[in-house]
Length: 247
Image 1 (cartoon, rainbow, N blue to C red):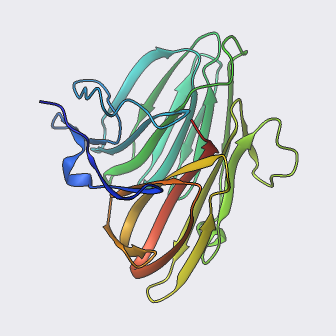
Image 2 (tube, one colour):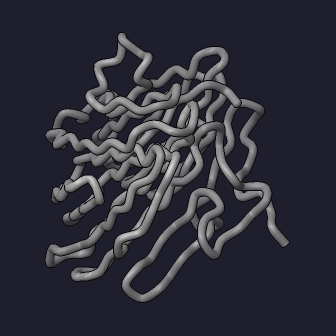
């Protein structure tokens, strides 16, 4: 029987234990599914606001996803370790490494592939966000962030095309703001989710405690609604966060 995968801390915070997430294990691929995807279906866990997919994928060397289609989805790929090589029907082919981000607006339709052509295992977050409307022209971009640019601060990665105030270099067709941070052990960072907003936070690496009540380990997540959080890193904490309009 499908169940909720989160534990409610209080009305504004819900903790998601990575050991209760969906899994896809196929030899060359080992995935943790934050939301229903592929063989994992849970009617209580389809999406979080405009956020439809976060897959934490481990891909063996020499393996990957052959050419396949997408449409009407904003897709971000955040590389944690290894090398991600992307190719698409628009003629783009790029290889990204740790901390770098690829963006693809599938729009009316596009085909692409993703491979690990490096020697080491590739780990990356595959993130799908619903666009604010269908039918955009397909688009591609990538940004080679210096990893240190997120040390001790929230690095803006992506924001809505309509948000003229954001410093994020990647623009997407949805009212979201995407950040990453790296908090050294013993240090703290604060994030405020304002009224009418919500956020989904993934602890990619490390250990952390949030607001003194939520203990998180690598791959855990947190749903945050209209709440200010303080993250205290127990071990160096690498974090990915998507902030958006409240559903």
